[in-house]
Amino acid sequence: MKKVLCSNCKNIATWIYMPGYGNGIEEDFHCDKCVYRGCSCNNEVLYYDKEDKKYNIEHIKHQVNEHNYHINLYNSEDIKKENFIQEITNPYCVKVIVNNIDVKELLKMVFVPVDENGKEYPCREYEYSENGFDKKSFDIVE
Image 1 (cartoon, rainbow, N blue to C red):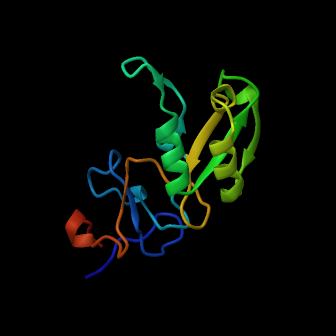
Image 2 (tube, rainbow, N blue to C red):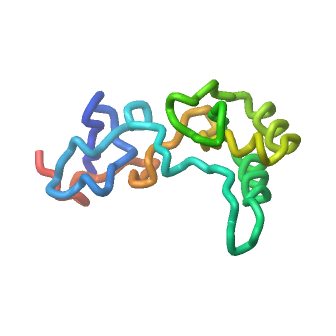
């Protein structure tokens, strides 16, 4: 079967932006190299769970210890662009920080999940297919 090609580079598309796809719009298809990466919908932050009456620190520790994360560090709990200080990308450093720092400092961090190559994931609204997408499945005609 013929595969849908990336709208940018014409390699086989392995990602599709699902909300945008509608009428065979090939601009919504991307290869792993060209897909738009980094979306706040994937990020984790420390917050106070009013129902459990505690911070979600165990969840954060579990995620960081089991998966790859970067840390975006801010100079206050007010996580805005102008308060950004630096990105910490070394997986070992991220784990050490999360497991050895107090809640007050963790509140100044955004935890960004990354793949095994250190690349941020696309938005959750993208769907992935390791083998690409068949044109016929999307009614794309040549």
